Image (cartoon, rainbow, N blue to C red; front, side, top):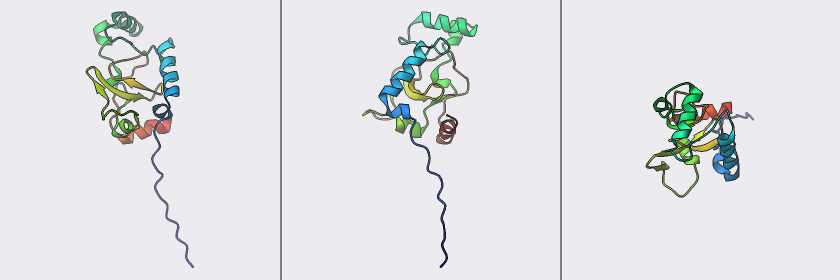
Length: 139
């Protein structure tokens, strides 16, 4: 008798834990707000003081700092697979008049595209499933 083993392609990773666990997401987000080296915000998008501190941190002008948002950060994931991970009864994509919800791979929480932080990195967003899975494998 000949036995044949069929190898199946490794199934893609599941959703990041923080997208499914409100307590963990809140803990990670709050830690990112409070951490001196992260300073996720602002809570109120019209908070000029936040952007002044951000500009000072980056040694730039306020109008330049305001352009560095989660929406164009290298760690902001809005890939089709990630949008399916985001919970809630709302239809996809999860948007409001100021932007949309995505996932931050750097700090591991659901974040809003209109906000930013001190660790912002150019090159985003992540909008392809392949790239999203690569980030997940590295985390």
